[in-house]
Length: 252
Image 1 (cartoon, rainbow, N blue to C red):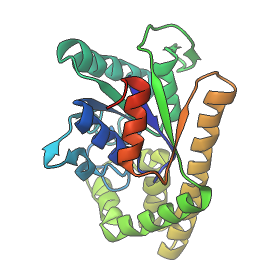
Image 2 (image 1 turned 45 degrees about the vertical axis):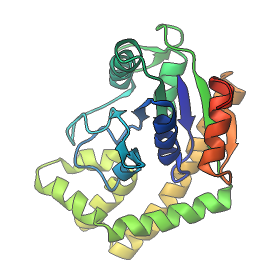
Image 3 (image 1 turned 180 degrees about the vertical axis):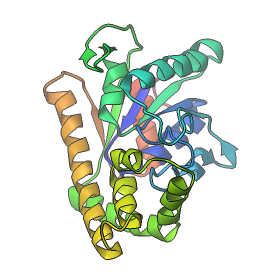
């Protein structure tokens, strides 16, 4: 299994889709919020990225739960196993796990088992060997991309998306629990903060989130012994793909 990880706004989905198109693979998403239907703009599904050269790349674990449901690492692990089995054993295709939710990725790379308290126990499951690649984007460029993407998504109707969820009866406390875009926009829509304050604080929160993601990934490497091969963000995706394929399958 090939894993592509990295912080928000580093371009991992587009890279994974282009790689899958090249090698005939399918993608399993490792994102704790993209599992929810109708939560598209705020979670950054970017479904257009899954169309490469006019062909749709198969993806899994996106749009599999209703907004308001509780989804956790245990459920992800079960859904992952089912998707992985279908890709590899039934269709005999390469599987590419792509996302930024470190616990989800680590839960299948290390084979964690979960008890009823959702606490991981290493080695409880036998899972595939993983070749893990991370996208190494400079901090200043990451911050710039996050800012640009936030304002783009606001212009694309992210506030209206959250209002639609409220209108259909998704509880305020669940939207707040989803955090980031859904939490801050819900606070704005329920009169808890003005729009400009919401945008300012949301941007700061996303920057902090990306920093926490990188802290998790570094912890995977340095404290939990999971090797990650870091790819330079500045490399064209074609070069990144060549490097991934060379290290996992041999030269193209």
